[in-house]
Image (cartoon, rainbow, N blue to C red; front, side, top):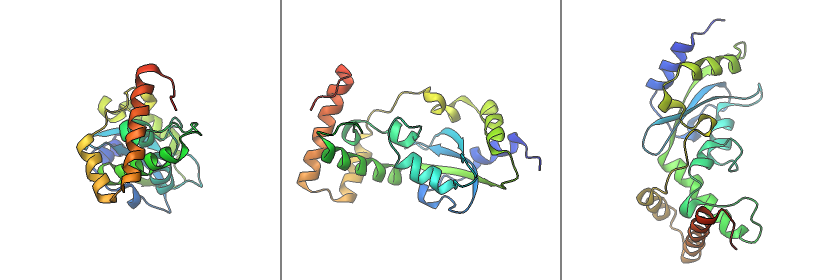
Length: 190
């Protein structure tokens, strides 16, 4: 089956962005990640025949570990949502920050996708689509773009929706302080 990369790219660029939890749980294909500003920033594909769009987008990019090609986790690992996954001393605070980040992505970021049959060489098609995509649509691919500054008002809205208690708010404030120290020095400070 021949599928035109230009058609796939047009589908991704024109699709209505949807919440990551809406991604198909029983299908594979190509997808795009849309930032909190509504801009398509990453184009990717399901990695194996056993990986669905839902697993890749919702379970990996939204809630996966930082630094592991999980782009929502990477790009929004800032401010009160920051954590160092290797920091065992501040593990409890880091878990709260990650929970906040996952909720932030669910609230303010979106994804687009196109379902493809398993007979298509999805990885080759992904390469062809990325090669012709506009620069803004692949700004996160290959980590060409630095993580965002914390979108404070949107994070505040997510905190309000989650109804974080004073203990949880103190934890994310400490994570923000750790982030600022890390950003300045590059070192984790307990």
